[in-house]
Amino acid sequence: MNPPPIVIAEAGVNHNGSVELARRLVDAAAAAGADFVKFQTFRADTLATRAAPKAAYQQRSTGSEQSQFEMLRALELSHDDFRALAAHCAQRSIGFLSTPFDSEAARFLAELPMHWFKVSSGDLTNTPLLRDIAAHGRPVILSTGMADLGEVEQAVRTLEACGLHGGDIALLHCTTEYPAPADEVNLRAMATLRAAFPGVRIGYSDHTEGLDITAAAVALGAEIVEKHFTLDRSLPGPDHRASLEPAELAAMVRTVRRVHAALGDGRKRPSPSELPNRDVARKSIVAARAIRKGEVLDATNLAVRRPGTGISPARWDEVVGTVAARDYERDEGI
Image (cartoon, rainbow, N blue to C red; front, side):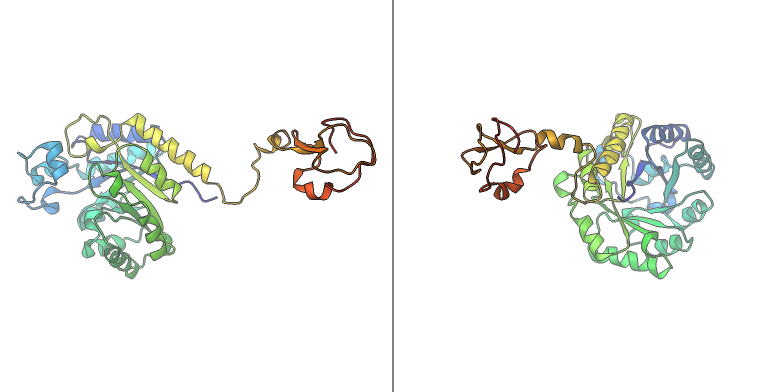
């Protein structure tokens, strides 16, 4: 059986610019059993222009008075903050990840004990950033929201041209809306990505409400799953409303592990727990009535009844037409 999916608890900017709140998010992700907790590393003045509009979901969550630039600036953490968070992750035995939104952020994060680089859906078409990230030689997880297959292919080829191959690249299918409508998720696109990019790891970044879509992605073979979480959905900020709370995150992790365990190895055979039930639930060929020695056995004097400790009814045709070698009482096994 394949190893269980990697679970990334996406803290994102749900720290609201507070490193103390970010530390509490690390604690919640570790307590939930996630493999990684992920943040976002950026500076507002290199991420967006002052005239950049907010997305509709951001306006719904934070209003329209504040610009996107102002919103982002309030959500920044310093390099020292991220160093402290990486150290806190190590203390809590959970992997640290953060998404760089520019090359300077990537250079900084390369100094930290971070196994993967995570690239956001918004930067899938950012060829210069992809090259700079790949130059650090670490595996890359690339979200593919808002992209068509050709754009994904261009991004993968860019990473490959920089020396990353196969297991060094993971693609997360994603629907970039918060929350994402379930009828727009299109989980079957994971199969399309798997067929188009053999050897590349395929997963799912979930922006839907609830746990069921993540579980379905695991059932369809997602090797990595990612989900936003917060300490409290009522907190101000752009992503809290579409995030899981800690108890829900823990439930999601349990569900992911349970669904993965249920997938098994695909071989059709009795499981260890059902073997003791086989003799009880299956049936045997028995005498339907008292049978005398020398009688021909047929449908008039034979029956199929529990338990399954005698001759299996799968051998019915072998038994019918033979002669009773002795007397049988009713219900006695032949």
